[in-house]
Length: 250
Image (cartoon, rainbow, N blue to C red; front, side, top):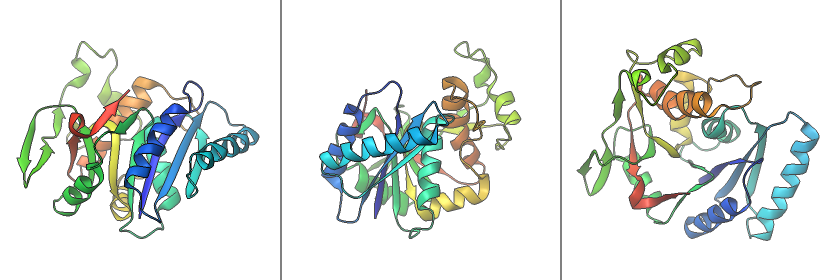
């Protein structure tokens, strides 16, 4: 079974991103597959959570999605928190079930993404499959594999005014010799069994403050897109699909 999940920010986005994902899901789904919508909002109002869940449940049903789950949460951790919430809800499923998780404005134009992800995951020593933009790749068994991104002094880059290493350390993100290794953040794919292995090693995927509103640089990039895979790298290997072969980022 496939759990197809997206992380959706309620405040600024329209339902069109959801419609785009429904189209992608319908292209690859089988009878028991589930569409999981993770909605992030800037509120702790549980009454509002119920209203939003009902509203988007109607949207999914109007677009032919009957087998679905909607998870509503305070917007503290973005995509990686949404991935964790999805895993946490389905963690007692069969270990052979799969989760494919997307940013809301990141979706596929090539339906082979699913079969290729499954084949790469099951025939190699990788704990998850992400996506990447770099051309620094190797070819093996007719598939493209990412050479993991290794950045040892990223906080010294002119692009960043904040320290990756200090923030990761302060949030108890344990790294392998302070090495940062990651895939780009639009897509995460693995099995329930593998996500359970990751959880056993690193705990909750996003180490930010669950009471504090999401910050793009700290929560989205440092603790999310970079911090989550960098923690994984201490214990496991991963790779990614080449973005321009499979995906569109709007």
